[in-house]
Amino acid sequence: MFQPVSLFIGLRYSRSKKRSGFISFITFFSTVGILLGVASLITVVSVMNGFEGELKKRILGIVPHVIIAQEAAENKNTSFKQWQNLRALLLQQNHVEQVTPFLSSEALIQSPNNLQGVLLQGIMPEFEQKNIINTHMLSGSLSSLSEQAYSIVIGRSLANNLKVNLHDTVRLVLPNKTLFTPMGRIPVQRKFVISGIFDVGSQVDDTMVYVHSKYGAKLLRRKGDGIDQLRLYLDDAFNADKVVDILESKASNIAELEKATLTTWNDSQGALFSAVNMEKKMMWIMLSLIVAVAAFNIVSALVMVVVEKQGEIGILQTLGLSRVGIVKIFITQGMVNGLWGVTLGSIFGVLVVSNLNEILSILGLNILGGGYGVQALPVQLESINVVVIVFSALVMSFIATLYPAFQASKTQPAEVLRNE
Image (tube, rainbow, N blue to C red):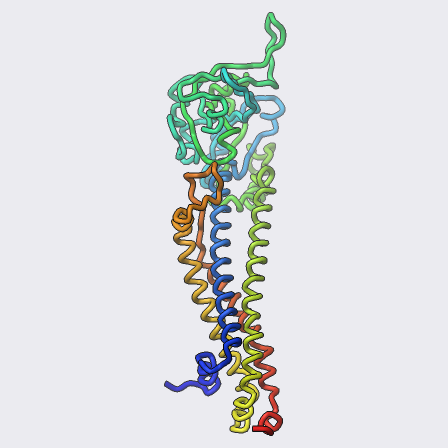
């Protein structure tokens, strides 16, 4: 098959067995360095994607993406009037997948063994069927809140701290609300029966408790169903600011929104995700430098090849090969090494990512620590990341070939062949 002369000679040089052992070692080292760098970058980025995905699932699956609270409900401690109409209207907006009513308050939960501060949420179980809590129940269910009066659903971590189990009784205390009694002013409190225990695997397990909004309203001394807020779950949590902007622009035409305050998950969790995103970028930079160092080892190998092939370069020039042709020869030779490293590194990296947890299990390694002995390392391989890594490594390899190739093209045939 016909090949351009520069490509043919470059491929011959890359397959040559006659070069010195040191040049072969440097060439091998640069190829293996690119291989390991690319494989490491694919593996680490996939794990970081997995952790970011788990954060989105476990935290943003529970934390409302957007919260709508009416100012009057906060100031006068009354229910959110006509929330049903507003909910129906919000479900028609772009990016909004779910709208659920709830009430919330800080509280203390007490068992015979312990006392702990929690965030009390009053919900309507019929609207919470897609809630991540409902899909991570260890025992009982959210629907039990409707079936049994003054029942409560708590997290496994909280249950362990309080040393309680299903059907045990706990006491909810509202330290910010008090009643006058013959014994003086005392906090509002009520006994609840544990009807469900969930395990999401995040901080929520230790800080959040759920009751039916009807009984939460009675505890808070509110009228009606006690709903004071609506929470919106979107198709993507990162669309929250866009949805808020749209709703604020329509607020003047929607009576229910006119006096409402809108907040997003960024207010409570934004710093955490910014830190994760920054850490991910830093890992990209550090591992990309490893690939760059390995790629620029091609410079050393090619410079030595250029010195070794001075005579042959001179002969090719006397036969009519142009300086551009000489440049193409050595770019081809360097890119062959880079291409081998990138290809093998990509294959190796994808195989490692696909079997990472099995590899760690065989080696007996537990990266997550003793508290996560049964939990797999989250991994999310994205094809776009692999493409970007491969393309970046090939570009680095190409840049590394330019200097030696340019130096080879400056060879003067008369000077080189004088002593031949």
